[in-house]
Length: 505
Image (tube, rainbow, N blue to C red; front, side, top):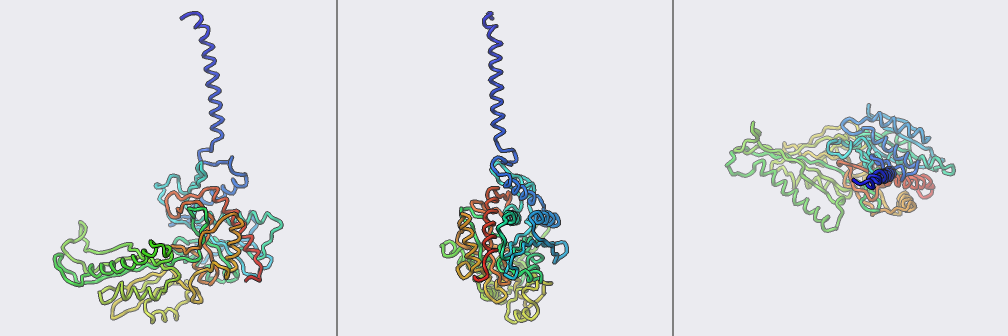
């Protein structure tokens, strides 16, 4: 190596070292501007917004999933938030261990009908190993998606209500004319019997003089918010078939499986007729009667499976039915008893009482017995009522609540100018810079039905636009920006509804 090369070598190494250090510093600076691993994104949210999101995450971390929802922890958290907002709050336990939290902001004229914002504290079970992130960690990724059970269904609503009320309470110029109530209820996901149902039937509820209710809705994949003016009512139908047993090789009429298969074919034809209306665009899926087989039981068990050379004497099938409020329940019952499960085909069924304490009966005489023995809103102990026809028991149908209100009207809320609450709600959405889609019937069922039974106008609404529908699914999430926009939307809605003058009503 020459002396010149030896002289320049240290200088070259020093230059390379300086370039390396400069590059490392730039990379470090660039990495510091990126979101943190858990996506906190402090740079993109205002301090107040960050706090609102963090309170949402705190609530999501309270484990209220069935089968063991921690209602005590949820009530403690929500009570602390209500106290910090300056709301009155009280807890009811219509059933021990199942608290219902009621928050109140008294209006200037408490004699006027009040508004009620409802949200349920419980959520459905989870399979943690199927999630990208732990379902109770409320992890927020770099895009602002907050993963947690209940993120959409519907813990977001409780915090949005509270944050909207917090903002309104901080405005010294705003005083609600009507009282504002928030009900945070248990057990919606398992039928609502010990939550909203008992609340709606209580003296405590009557004293609130509720004139209008907002309950949960669903996310919207488009830029329009969805709003629901009715729910479909679930019925669970169990048909049992009977027939003489026989050798597997014997061909004869009236076997149990043959009788049940006729029912399956008849039900399938009805299902097709309803589904054809949906596929032709004549009706929405929530506007028809859906009926889907969910299980079948047949065969004679053996140690290795089933006896293959013997035709069984009994078999049964279960169907999940959903009735829109426009359906005539008496016609549906008649169709079941005369077409789907007629006694003439040795198809039997029994009247089953429900977890809500309501009973579905098939004959007119049975309806008279029910009217004489129980009130549709009592929700006390279930009555066990059986009806018989020619010595046979009737098909079991479990109706999870009525489809008529206390005055015999369909359980629907008007979404036109005849309903001043709707007009104000619709205008408030527009004032928020948002758009409403065409009002819908919800395909499933919520606590809103208990309010509609009382004849109270009730809308299902969750301000989640441009959001996939993930309720009850793995990896349920809600984006932070969508959550925050919902708070501003509720500010407008609550302000408008609570200042509605008495004259329009």
